[in-house]
Structures are given as structure tokens and as C-alpha cells.
Image 1: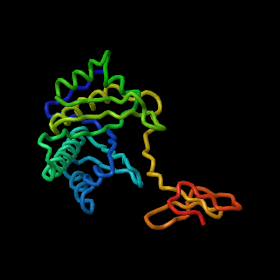
Image 2: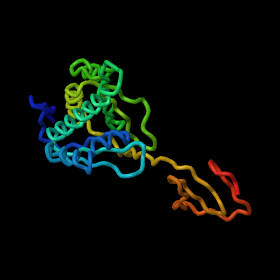
Image 3: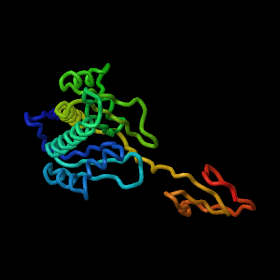
Image 4: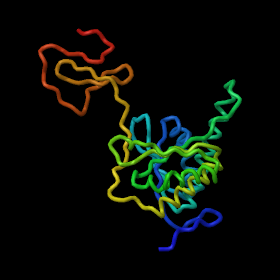
Length: 228
């Protein structure tokens, strides 16, 4: 099989799916007011951009499409994050601009190819793009995926993502991949009268997932309220 070559503009006529791990604030920035930002990104890049549901501190952003569409989507995300950093610095005494950081979620079976023999591939990526690239040593909880963190200027990140895409296309994942799914933020649980309640704001909501046996005396765990 012929090795895949990246054209000068970075276009490969292949459909790829790249997963990103983002904090809630980053996701809010990507979605924008009434979803306008993510809608614009989808239209202008031509990539499908899906954001995982759920009340989680972390969310998965999945970008699917031809590689040139993926590169455009990544560029838009990287420049949006840089814009957020510049805006946050206007109210800050800091003088040096922190780098843009993106976290990819990559099947562990492909991470060896990204690192290369003796770290040669990852070193080459760092030197040729100017981006910092780190591959996590441990897998993400309950999955067979690892986080790959890319930091730098948006242009460096885009070049680095292009190189990562080529490696992922040349070295497909081996075996089944168990995708990482972020867990919801755990709310405090109160046990009272045989029923479990979670605290949401000022209210105690019956916990939907578990049924508790009646107890002779209410047991309160992790509760900010006094026992009655």
C-alpha cells in the first residue's frame, strides 16, 4: 500500500473522526450564544461537529469530515481559543500570552505510532511545527483511549494536527476501542426515610438511579443540613 502523502494545502480526500476533550467553559466558547458559533464553524468548515450531552465537567467534541474540513474546523477552534485568551488578558496584569491548548482523545493502540521509536516521531512533530505535544502515559478512565495535549500558537497547532491525522491514517487502531465518556459531576446525596435525594441548587431531588430499603432512623451522609 502506498504511504499517504499530504498535499501542500493539507488536503487528503479521506473522511476522519477526531475527538477532543474540553472543559465546560471551552465548550461554552465553541457553542456561542444560542449556538451561533458552532453553527458558523459547521457551515464554514464543512465538518460535522458534535458535542456530547450531559452535566459533566468535561465534554467530548467530535469532529468528522474530509481532512481539509477537519483542518478548517481545528483552525476555527484554535483561533477562537486564542481570542478568548486575549480577551481574558485585557483585565489581567499578565504580560506574556499563554499558549492555546487542545486535548485530543486518541486510541491507545495508535499512540505508539504518534510517539515513534525512541520518541522520534513526537520529537519530529515538535521541531517541525513549533507546537508542544504530550501523550499521556495512562489511559483515560474506563476506556482504551489516551489524551494527547497540543499547545502553542494556532498556526503551530493546525500544522501539528495535520501531522497527527497522517499518522492516524497510516496506523489505524488495533482491536476494539472503548471510547472515553466523561462522568457527570457528582452532586451530594442525602439519605432520609429510605429515599435518596441529590442536592440541586436549593432543592433536594429524589435520586433516580437507586432504590433504598427503609431504615428505622434517617441516615444523613455528606449533608450540609442537621439531622432531624
